[in-house]
Length: 176
Image (cartoon, rainbow, N blue to C red; front, side, top):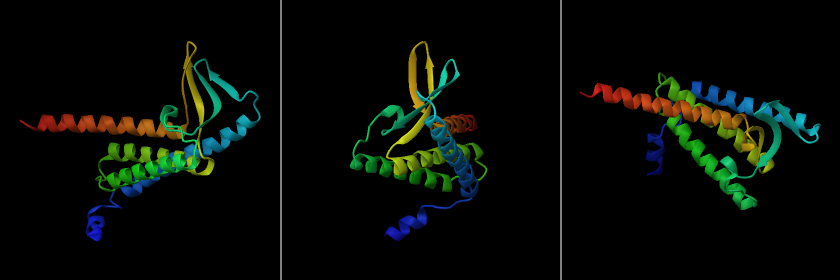
């Protein structure tokens, strides 16, 4: 029974090679930026570099998920977040494997999500938290701190959603 399930789930498809390259590029950009910025910020006291009136580079460790939700202070909490990330990445990988190679926007969107998720997962496994650096702010209000992986995930999500809306619109136009 289990064997038939896995035969029906495509784990490698025609879009996986392209998707893997995009995901690896996002992962590498994230990890290299983290190596560079962690080293750079060790020498700054306080560790804050103003890039623009609305953007600083700071050092932050997020033990939770987006916006600091679900802080995982314990080992079991961290393991739960790692498991959720692995399950989500598996789901996206299967979706990518089932995607046709001519569906470029979908491939790029899913792959950026995978690469960003892998970057943050790597941090969570290695450090117990995700390294964040970029702090957006305006008029005394500070939004969350984020990293290159978060940018890849957000950009991938936006590309994916735009593609889904475009698909829906094209399907509606074809139906008389």
